[in-house]
Image 1: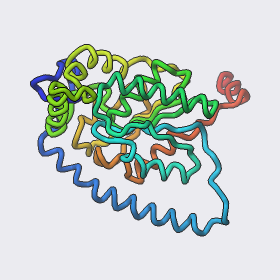
Image 2: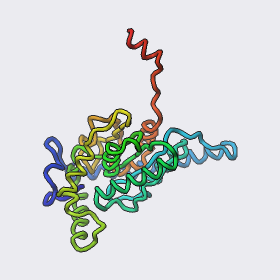
Image 3: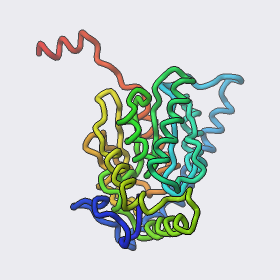
Image 4: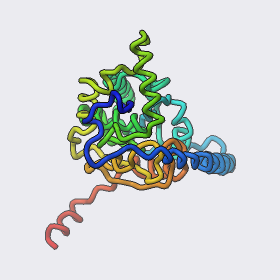
Length: 279
């Protein structure tokens, strides 16, 4: 859903949003430090697990969790986050996406099938964590199939303005469109970025969510790939982090925010509600 200015549909960049400056991509250099922090955190966690009693396992937490990668990425990009969440007791699942480079509507349909499979297997609704484009796909499916989704957590997902992206990423999508025209049909087509497919995908990413579907939108003002303002959905609980766009997939601080968003929220007791009403 991110293309060059030659082909981008105007509705993908609503008024009030804009592409990050060309120099903004330099902020993505912080991902080296973020990767270092993850490595240090993983080493510390490994040592802690070695000191735990043999055979002990973390207590299972909440519903199953499906991780959805961003544009150009595959399931492996979220493997570090998956490992961290599993060590905390979450049961995580891959989206079965080798590379998120195809039709957005097709990817949404695949995601829905995967959700049906997991929900049936576990007998529970699923929570989705989506990075960038993955978060946009997650939001659309959650609005359409709330019977399958208990909540979503998006990370750097520009749902309000998919076209507000860095020029370097635009060139990547332009290449995919050209390859599609040349016969590689499984890649993103022009219709996915400037036609009916783009329109439907954008509408799905802004559809109304039921009240019983939790929604947390994680964003960073240091994001060098998308306009961070486009990541703050009015329907979500916004959580700010200090991370690069790419680094959100493994930054320990972001993983902590994701973990907090995935945990079941306490429900007020009837006594507390009555007291609140009588106050």
